[in-house]
Length: 318
Image (cartoon, rainbow, N blue to C red):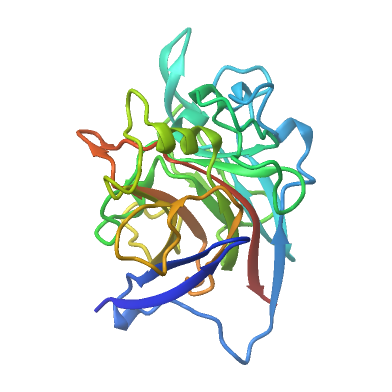
């Protein structure tokens, strides 16, 4: 039996509503916070990320791709409390190599996270993929750009392996997650830890904002005439090395919403940093990010699967 919840997402200048769904059966109910336990909550921003882990040298982020001399791979690792860390990596998968045609390796083409400090709000091209559509960020410096290379339209019937192209926040130890056998199709290995995700700030990237505002050769504009919408989803899993694992639950928030008859929901395209409440998600070891939208085509979602993120609040039991 699925349980449905309603929660409110509060932004800098907008109020959003979204639904949270628990995907677990009653007999296998996931863990939620206990009132008699003590928790430590960390706010994870990205202003202190080392320069060598920031996407560049342009707004495209060539250093996130296979073959770049100083390529970013495992991503930023931030301490939450004690020996529990959050990791924000570039995805590992099938990618292009100029010498060997196709290989397995880390590459932003496969999805994942980029740490960025780009704010170009005019260039509407794909090469501007690391810019946020805002002149600042909640933490006052760097932020994340999440890219999903393959979105999933039916979350409740999906398994962990279906989200191969999705960005994933791993809850792990100081060593982090890594691919044990480079050059092969391998799941990440490392120490699983658990945490509660409390909140995060979201915003549109410039590239996606401009696509939704004007359309391009691959995607339609979103407006009140077509009642277009685009949303980001945060999905909890309890095991990063179980391909058949089912989601524990998820919550979602709109990045664009022109659907009629929803007076309580934000209307239009998000252009401000907006705080999303994640506290109804159960304890998990992986947070997967997925996108859904109204502009669908033969190969799935036409709207590019990006969003900007900052200031994760994450709690662990002491």
